[in-house]
Length: 287
Ligand code: TA6
Image (tube, rainbow, N blue to C red; front, side, top):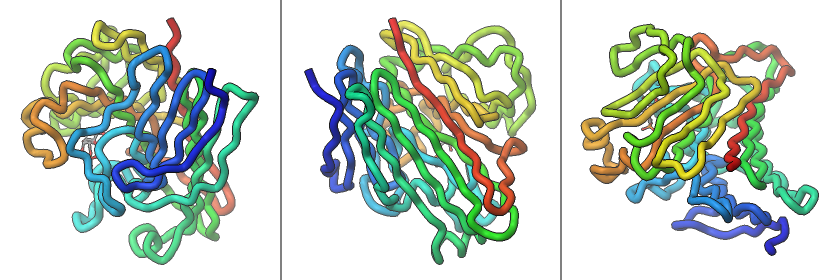
């Protein structure tokens, strides 16, 4: 029986820390503080990583749980990367600890510096705590270390592995309004039916959940519960958009659905000097 422990290593040249518990193994790249894998001992891998993902410092890695911060989506200045800079910087591993023999928590940190201040002129410290056990928890905390308020967006952009995207659905957002980015951002209201994936789906819901991913293509449903989150983004590129993405195989869209938890658009967070905000999400799957 594995005990709760951790070890450092590399994956495709990127430095990683691996959290090993009796129930699961979780791999986190220091680049982007990006969770790349969560493999329960009694289930399939929960996360998907593109077979053409870029494993290179400074480049976005498609898959796992990219952190979109301090902005979500394209930046008004087209010269800046979509989804902010948190996912393309190397974070500091500030601590790892085994908790009561069944879980392990890793903490990673990114502080503002000359590079970030050039594109986001605010002093901050961002911390991500990843706790692995029979489920997976992420706590993303931002502290305003400057002397003026600032606003930021965040999304934990999770790629959930599925056997077939058209054989799962996302449940729990019935009645919520959403911006349909496939229809130019048109505002719509989700009816009571689960969200299904036939073709490109790209929707920003005004709800932090809880939601679930379920269907024949997921042996067991994954439940997603959050605190400090007011947005859920649901995305799958479908075949046409996938064909435009250099870091995806043509059929890659069929291997995942993205259900992302955070605070984006008009749900962005404004922090007073010295204030902090935590976006917390828990992924669980019980029989
Ligand atoms: O979360 C959905 C989304 O904003 C989509 O519009 C699509 O751009 C996706 O993120 C992936 O973005 P990326 O920059 O990682 O290719």
